Every structure is written in C-alpha cells, then in structure tokens.
Image (tube, rainbow, N blue to C red; front, top):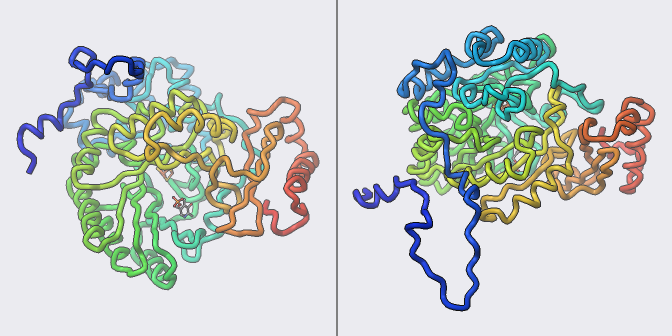
Length: 482
Ligand SMILES: *Cc1c(COP(=O)(O)O)cnc(C)c1O
Ligand code: SF4
C-alpha cells in the first residue's frame, strides 16, 4: 500500500509555479527560457458541474451525471430530443439546420449527455464536438466521386463474418455492431448503427455462435498473434462478454496480444467510474494476460483536448492504477483538430492523463462527411509541428488507410502525390507487393478549375491514368486497384 504522504503527493495536481522554484543557474551557463504560460494549458482540465449550463440538466447533481446508466438513458438519438434539451440556448436557424442534417445523415445519430454538455452552445457552428456528432445540412458537401460505402475493403478481407484478416499476423474482430455514440465519420458506417433512410447495413450482433466461428478461424491460423477487438464498440459488450471473449482469446496459444478498442472513455468516461463490473472484467483480463505473459491493452479514440475533463482523468486513473495500458487513435478532421494548436493540445493532454497517442488517421472517404476531410498535405504539415513538442513515445504516427484494402500507410510514404489533383498512390508490400493503392484529397481543398475537371468522368480517368503512368504502372493492369 502507498503511505499517506506519498498518496497526498500523488493526488496533488497543483502545477509548479515560479514562486516555489528556488533554482538558480550555474554562472555562465545558458538557461532555457521558461515556456509560455499557455504551454501548460493542457493541464487545465475542465472542472465542476459544467453540464448544468444545459437548461434541461440545471438540477442534475454530480452523482447523477456520473451514473453511466443515466448517461445511456439520456443520450440523444432523435432530433426532437436535441430540441428538448438545448432549444432555449441556441438560435432557431441552427435548430432548423440540425433537423435537416439529421434527415440527410447516412449514419445514425447518438450523442451522450457528457459530449452534449461539452459543446460550446454559444458557437455551435464551429464547435469541434458538435462537428463530429451533429450533422448540419448547410455544411454537408457532396461526396468524393471515388467513394464507395466500404471504401477500406474490410468486407473483402473477411474469411468469417466479423473478422477482417488483412495483415499477416493481426486481425480485426468485430464483436458487435453498436456503439455508445455514433460518429459521423465512422469508417464502418456500412455496419454500425441502425439502417437509415439512405443505407441498409450489414448486421453483426453480439452473438456467441458467430464468435465461435471467429475463435475457430483464429486458432486455425498460427501466424495470427494480435487481435484487435472492436465493433461497433466493446463498451457495449456486457462485463460477462468482455471477460468471456478475453479469456477465450488468451487461451489460444498463438494469440499473444489483444487490444480492446473503444471510444467509450472519450464519450462516456462515467462508465469506467460507476460500472464496477465492466471495469473489473477488463482489469481481470489484463491481469490474466500478464500471468500468461501476454499483452492486453485498451485502445481509445479522443479527437480533441476538450473531450478530456476531470471526469475523464478520474476514470482513466482507475485503470492506470491497475496497470491498464492505454493508447489513443484520433481522426484528423477539418474544424475539429486540423490545426497545430489543437493537435498539440490533444497530444499533450493525452500524455498528462497517461494515454499514449498512437495514430492520427487522415480522414477516410466516408459518405456524408466530405466537409470533415483534410488533404494529405495538412496531415504532413501538422505532423511536422507536433513532433518534438513532447516525448517521442507520446508522438502519434500520421497514417492513411488507403482505398481498396491497402491498409494503413505512413502519410509521408506515398509513391506519388500531386497536390493540384489531390491524387496520391501508395504501395503496401505486406498486403500485396504488386498492387498500388489510391488516396484522394477532398475536392473542396482543390482549385475551382480542378474541381471542374473532377466533375467530368472522362477527365477523372485521364488524371488517374497519368498518376499511374508517373509511378511506372500500366494503367490497364489488374494490379492497379480502383
Ligand atoms: C488497423 C487494423 C489493424 C491493426 O493495425 P495496427 O497498425 O497494428 O494498429 C488490423 N487489422 C485491420 C484490418 C486494421 O484495419
Ligand atoms: S465509436 Fe467507433 S465504431 Fe462506433 S461509430 Fe464511432 S468511430 Fe464508428
């Protein structure tokens, strides 16, 4: 046990101030000037009962707001519920815009009270959390002409329903198809959420007969060492199934590493605090993995520093104390985290709460989200400014998930990138050494003349043809995917 003194030191989050710093430098040696005061802003987590600014929740006390069941029950899935919650504090034109946005969205909408209360309702159009979860009709842009619904080809590499085996030693296990929230930019919108007016989904229920076929496949492939347990989102698996799937996978001799992937800590950290059974199930699988000399970690998905509050820190501390290692994957999104300041703040704040930034994904081509995408060049520029701002192990790799199933590539490692057409080509030798894989910048980042060329199918083929020729590929080759 930690003694009282050590414990109070542990829980003292007061930043060092110049007044209590009695250090004086050796004569003649150069002292690095102190960082600007806002360089410490990542430690200023939002405090207090911030949710009480929402009129409907003015009387909700801390115990209620920390109850994950209350969070679940009060999540917003329909426009009329949004209206009932925030109508008094937002302009009517915003509400009309959101109503039309709900109707046009290819993805279900589901927002937790936690997220809703973090939106700055004085500036809802520009708010980074609003942009991720609440579509506005006036902001929706036409999809890129090269978009298909499963543009990452996850269904193509599925030997059994719900397992994508693309890379040699790792596979993606889609345990279920629901999530605690629904993100507009979800790359699995082919499966996640309810059918909408625009899209019929592929359904993958939390179903043990389906899981048995997946365990059997994993066991039949001795090269598989690393299983990403995702969905949907493992937050929505009950504690019994968290334990069951974890134990079944750990028992397979070839499985060495498991990651539980969930956006939960970013969107409803309350569950880690008040769902004791669920938290303990995860901790027990982590401990069981350690005894077996295997690695079980949590992967989560914060996109902005604003999503990390005192509630998040309390939740993550409970996992950290038990030795649960946490990594983060973000999606680079326009108007959300596509500035140097926003990305540095996110990375530093993640480090502060002991979460390791792992990846930043360039936003994929996903139906109805073109306004959230950035160019590849934006990712390259932001990476340059983030690297060096903190520890190397807390510096994310910026990756592109290439079209047609080429998998993740370091954003910088393109074979070809023409900034005027927005066309990029990548190779992915571990997936297929023969093939080339495309990526396309959003049309709104290109010049008006270039956007006009993209509108013409013949010119579009011509631009892709010359890109292929530039990397020495024969455009007629089967090897040139897409
Ligand atoms: C992302 C992904 C993985 C895991 O890849 P890492 O680079 O190890 O994080 C595994 N399988 C599929 C299909 C994936 O998309
Ligand atoms: S939580 Fe993950 S899987 Fe679910 S909608 Fe969001 S991005 Fe998609």
